[in-house]
Image (cartoon, rainbow, N blue to C red):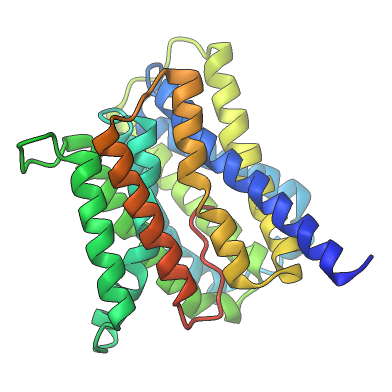
Length: 296
């Protein structure tokens, strides 16, 4: 098979991953009507860990104490991202959550500049202004300067994912990719489950909708999506893969419209468009050669 054909297959497959990730926003939002956010995350990520363990045990058994430490640090940022995203979904639409989560891509270069005391580039400044303006039109009610509560929580999630991306760049080259991801998934799962068992009631029963949500988010959106990305991204460039993954909030909006009757106003649509443009500019001007991992 030619290199061009392999690249096309890889990018089409990653488009499918973006569609799966985008659809999970409305799936999770519906599931939260039956189960608390911490219990949902705990069961989701522990199930994903078991699937990953079954499919990739030879890689995972290579885990050492250095991988455990690095995976724990990355897992903490991943935990922050998913906790605030999941709780935020209780108070905002899946469409808003999808686009605001995408701001993490824009936050990466500005946080990187602050951490390493570098002056932000012109393109970084432009993307931040575009993203902030987009957030204003998407999340602030007309004639109001008060950010909606759910959108505020998801914005914190975007910061968590941004820090996760930065530290993945620091640690990923030193460890087996599947092993360090398994540690992160297990960390998020076990911490979330412990908090959930203490603070949330156990569901009286697990409905078909709830079980379907666990299956989609744990198996497809976490374990298989990661394995697919890990196997196929080598056939394309980091920039091209990252651009494909920016379609995730678009799929979130489409899923919200089809399954939850969520309709963006013209004002919100304009804001979502600005956020999408800021994400694309951020990716196209990034100097780093590493792929952005927006989700795990």
